[in-house]
Length: 149
Image (cartoon, rainbow, N blue to C red; front, side, top):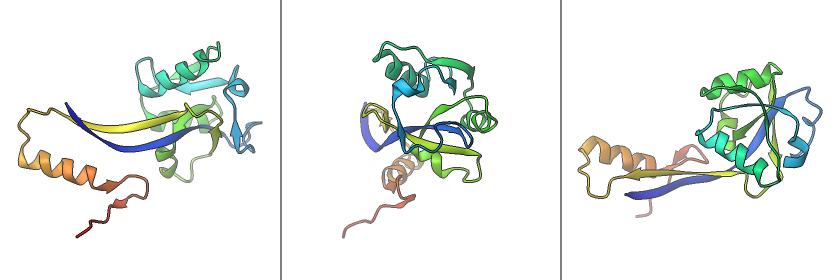
């Protein structure tokens, strides 16, 4: 396999606008203990991160709902069902969503997005062009990276 890192970013916690922690700039995992979580099912990177953050502190997250649809998770959080981990990239999605994003005070609350491909596999012209486009994109600014001549 070959790979290239696309971006690394913080993962925060989304919560309804009227949540008691919604006015904070950051929260600790200990402060999130006992809170109802809306998250992805076991095996999904988001769920593995949640479980790992809590387990490192001897805690277990209180899961009230599981969904594989990120939009559904955001809507359930906005409806007041619970709170949930949300990557920074997703914050740029729907600015009208009735949620607030609060940083998690833990250096481990991050994700890295990496593109992988088979080192010895034949890539079609379209696949190579797609890889070039994806790796040439600045995923943080949402614009193509400047090329140096």
